[in-house]
Length: 309
Image (cartoon, rainbow, N blue to C red; front, side, top):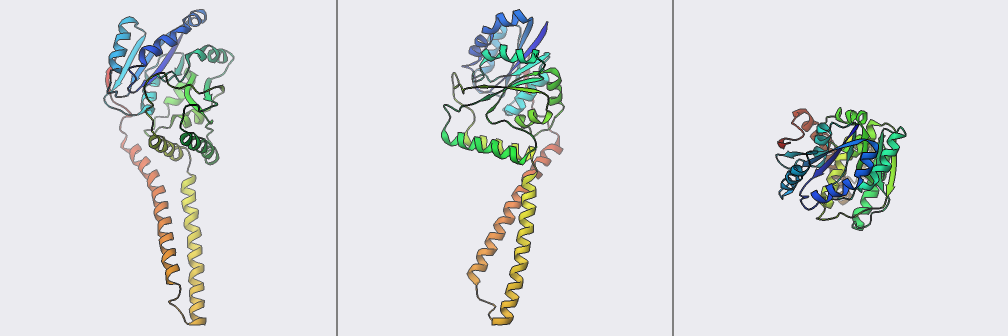
């Protein structure tokens, strides 16, 4: 029999813990038919509600349920990594507890694994229920990433993905502290089948990702999988050096011909402010990459476990 590990990152999802369990095991006949055993790994990312208590209640009913509870909130990326480390299955699937990742797709996804695919990923083709501003910037982000990085990141890609053990081991080999899972999925490669579905709004509760958090997450992705911003900073520096050299020549020639070295003071101030702003901008880009390096060399653990059963 094959073992399927279902990883469910949770942060304040007490209302959805039981609903997810019930929805998943609507596929019980399929699991029995294919000879699939299931283990559920609820990864509690430092929830401040009763998520842990709800998982404990389920554990009393079903010993296939396991819990990894963090000592504090480390973020979804850490929760995903912890789940992959904890998983023992021949196949592993990542799913959100809010049921935006429909368990009803699992039979179709497993079918593609049987056909020889290494992983089966999902992408939503609509963003129904999302604020228009968030949808607009999300599309721009995916377009930008695919232009500045050699790692393909599919527009609308979800973390909902069924993988073989070989793919999981490859992801675990990338043990960097600053994690951007969507990019890691693309970087490791392997033959992937994409399944499209319309966006499903969360069953209960509220989203934990604000626009600002998504913006920071986007910056993480850009700095993790592209060095183009550093190239842009270098090019801008070279362009302004050439521009400054030309202005020096013009100023000298103008002074020699017209004897008026003080004209153009307002424009000079504007140029100084512009160049200073560009320098600070480029310094900020370098600082982003330097901060990532700083976090990596400290070699802090990606997460700390408070409870594990």
